[in-house]
Length: 176
Image (cartoon, rainbow, N blue to C red; front, side, top):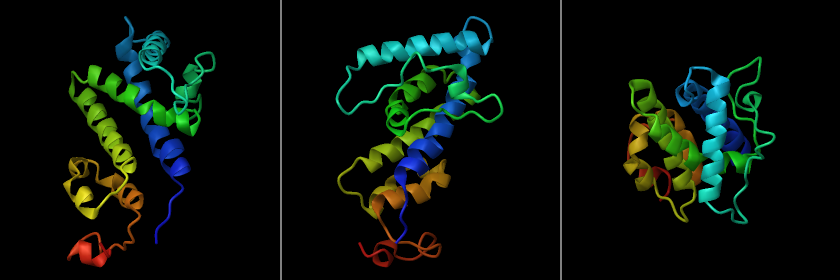
């Protein structure tokens, strides 16, 4: 059985890097100029409006606005990675997808949107009560986001080996 620490691998791993990269690449497009600092102010305003339009529930963890700085999106000496708690990162997925959809006017914007949409599909699958291998086979994001397939399989709690993911009757092999 393959087991995964979802919080560290997904919320604070893949999703943190994806959101950091998304936000960092969107900053020049958000402001009146290409200055990232100006775009960051616009991003924070959009995030504040998002939080106001989505009333806080007990399960929603917000990013503290006073602590959200440009270095929380990209450290001075590294690649873009959103530095936030796991729950905060997870709850920013919807906002980030809306942001990517708003800025999908060119090829780079379309790629950002497709990437964040595939992650959103994975999180939606993870929130289902039951998940079958057929759900994974029908998942449209696999065609473009095959690198996330192991996470989708882990979500399903299926046992697998490299030979089971490539051929044969998958339902029989994974015991469904």
